[in-house]
Amino acid sequence: MDESEFIKYLDELFKAHSFKKKGTQWSFSNDEIIKIIKLAKSRYGNYYYIDYGFIIKNWNLMVF
Image (cartoon, rainbow, N blue to C red; front, side, top):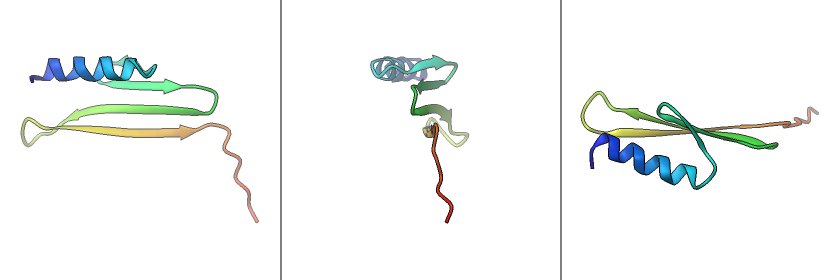
């Protein structure tokens, strides 16, 4: 599988879960959370990293 096939596979997978693509990054947002998935190629070979992050909206922290 080459890079373009891999990105196409990920694009179809993430779109099925309502993610939107921008470059090599996919994001999903609703009233509660923002999810971000980013694809990065390794400098050391034909390897890829998938970075995943999220932001919780309206997170009320209690301070005692």
